[in-house]
Image (tube, rainbow, N blue to C red; front, top):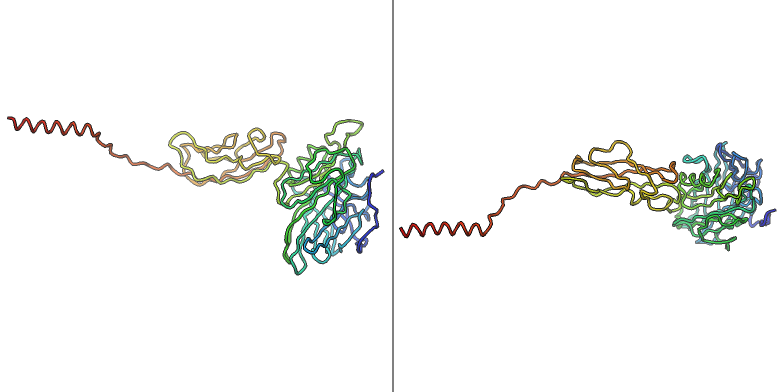
Length: 419
C-alpha cells in the first residue's frame, strides 16, 4: 500500500476537463502524456508514466499517480500547477496534438505564460524521451519565470522501497531540489522534503520517495521565451542509465532503481530497470559522459629543432563532470594530421621542426576509459609560422688584439726613425 498520497479532488481553481491524451512510445519505452503536459494520462489504457517495454514495468504508476509540474511569476506571486494526483490550478488548455511517437501540449498559465511541452524520442539515445519546454511571456509586463517538476519513484520489483539518486550539478537556474515526489510542483509552495532537501545523494534509501526540482529562469520580457529540456527514460541497469544520461547531456538528474534485484538477488546494480528523470539547457555543466570542447591555440613559431607544445586540448574537456586526463580518457586524432603536428595521449599538441607553416583546424576524439562507448569529438585550431631568419652579424675584433696590432705598427715607425 502506498505510504503517502495526496487527496485527489482538493483543487483550487477550475481543473482541465477530460480531453485528448496519449500514450506514445519509441520501441524502448512508453510515455503517457496528459493534455496539460504532465504524465500518466488517466483517459488512456494502460495508464502510463514511464514504462520499460522490455519487461512491461512502469516506474511511476504502481502507487499514486504522483507526477506534476507547476509554474509561477515571482513578480506578481502568481502560480499554477497540474498533475493527475494533485489536480489543476491556474492552468487552462489551449491545444493538444499527438502521433504514435510524439505529443505536444500547449496551455495558458494564469494569463501570464504560455507553456508548451513537446514530447519526442531523443535523437541521442533510445532510452530517453525528450520534452522541450517553452515558457513564453504572453502578458504586457516583464515576468520572472519559475518552474517546478516532481515525481514519485515506484520501481519494480521493490515498489515503495527503492533507491533514489539526485545530482544537482552547477546549474545557474536550479534553485531547489528535494526527494519529495509527492509535491504538487507549485514553485511558490513550500517543500520540507521527504528525507532531504538541496543535497546531492546517491542511492538514498531504500524508501518511498522521488524527486522534485525547481528552477528560476529569470526575467522574461513581454513576448520573450525561455526553453529547456526534460528527459524521461529507463534502462536495464544503472550503468546503462548513466550511459543514456551521458548521451542526453544531463545537467541535473534523478535516478530511481530497485533496492533488490529480481528473485531475491541482493545486488543494487539497477537491474532489471533503472528509471531516469533529467534536465538540460538549464545553465550547467554536463554531469555524465564525455564532453570535448573546441580549442584555439596561440600562434606558434615552428622550432628549428625538436618539438614544442602548442596547447593541451584536455584542459577544458570533462568526463562525468571531472577534468579529462589520460587516466580517464583515451585520446586519438581524427583524420590525417599533417606531418610534423601530432597529439600526445595526455593531450599536448606538438609542433615539430618539420611542420609546414600554415593555419590548421584539426579534430580529435576522447572516449571514457570506464565506458568506451561514451565519446566526443572537438576541433583545435592553430597557426604555425616559420622561425625568423636571423642575418649573420660581423664579429667585432677583440680590443686587446687591436691594441697589440697598433703597438706593433708604432714599433715599426720607431725603427724607421732610428735608421
